[in-house]
Amino acid sequence: MPPVKSRREMYSDATRAALLEQATALFAERGYTGTSLADVATATQVTRGAVYHHFASKLALFEAVIDAQESRAMEDVGAAAAGIDDPLEAAMTALGVFLDHCCEPVYGRLCWQEAPTALGFARWHDYEQDYALALVKGFVELLMRAGHLPHTAPESTTRYFFWMLGGAGLALSGTAPEDKQRVRDEWFDLIRKSISGMRP
Image 1: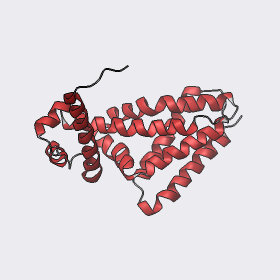
Image 2: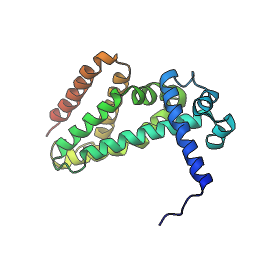
Image 3: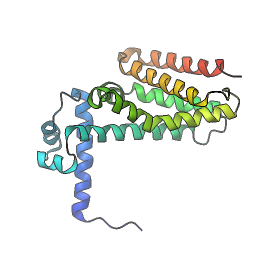
Image 4: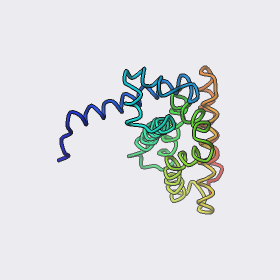
């Protein structure tokens, strides 16, 4: 049985969750550079000291927001494919969920537009690898074992699809709302055809 939290600990957890919620909304609306810790404190109705108690800097707060966004997205992608026996169907289902996330205004802006600027390209790339590369590798391995992809160059094949998914994310994040569904479907079709075209 997990230990029972004190009232102070529960309040601290609630404050941190509220800070993340408000920061997510503000970063998505105003961007990283257009949002200050004072803005987040005001929106959450706490002092700046309370913000610094949980996050050492604006960058640390932004990283926590990105962690939450990427964790949710990758969990949804994995859950969508769970229980689907056919590897190709599982991969295509997961792909659809990923592209749908990229169409979301908050995830799209934070993870594909603001993160490269706020974190720098190298740190942003590390984030994308930490959250998505192993998942992509898992799908590639399943597709290889099922005969949908050749068994040659597994690492390069994984990187190929990893960067293709990154291209889709970047493209969708910058697409006008009225065009997102069309562009999403085009990327889905391109990636599906890439898999089909590589079948041994």
